[in-house]
Image (cartoon, rainbow, N blue to C red; front, side):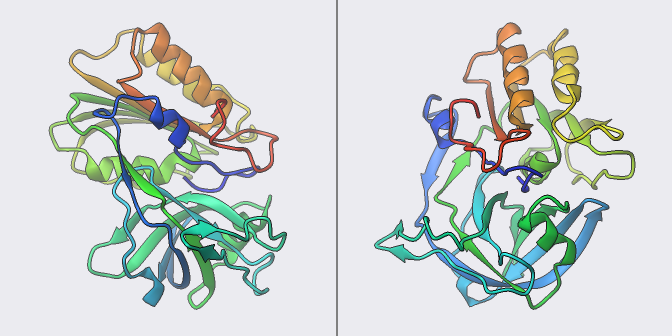
Length: 288
C-alpha cells in the first residue's frame, strides 16, 4: 500500500478475522516505534518512488505477509520537526497528538543483507506524505510504527487473480516475489496513464493487464471491477485465490463479482485502502 491522494489504507484485521484460521494465518509481532534515516531513493515510475530506510532502530524488524504494513510518520512539511509515536508498555499513548502526521504503507521488503526497509510511495500534491515523497532525499528522517503482525496468505493455489491501483502496487509486487514458479497469475493494475507502469518481478507465469485512467481522477473509474468481472465470466480451472487492494468502492464491487461467481470467503482476501473524497478513511471499517 502507498498513501492515496485522499487517505491511505491497509489489510483489515477485522476482515481477516472472519476467515478460517487455516486460510490466512496471522502472526503477532511486538509493536515498536523506529526513527529511521533515508539511505537512498529510487524512481520506479513518474508517480512512484522507492524509499530505503535504515539505521540502528531497524534492528529486529519483521514482516512476512504480502500486505503487511507500517504507519510512516512525516514532518508536517519537508524540513520541519518530526513528531514520533510514543509507546508505553507496548501501547501507543500519544495518538491524539495533533502534531502527528502519518499514513499507512505496505512494507515492500526488508532487503536481504542490506539492513534497509523499502517503502514504495506514490507522489502527489494532495497531502504531506505525497509532497514529502516528491522531494525525498538521503539523510532525511522518518518514523515508523509496526507492523503489529503478519497476515500470511496461501501460496498453494493453482491460479492467482490479483487487482490493484497504485496504492496496492507494493503488495502486488510482494505477491510476485512470494508466489512459486508453478503458479499462474492474472493481474490487473490501474495507473494514471501509459508510462506510469512499474517493473514487476519475474519468476512466475503471469498475464498482466495495465488499465489507464487517462485523465480521470483516481477512484473515478470502474476499470478494475470491470476487468475482474470479465475475467470471471470463464473462471480458471483448479484452485483459485483472489486478492485486491485499492479504492474501497472498487474493491467492494470486485468482492461482489467474486461472490456472484460462487467463490467462498476461503478463496479471497481484499481491502479498500482508501475511499475517494474521504480523508483519513478507516480501513478497519466494514466498508473496507
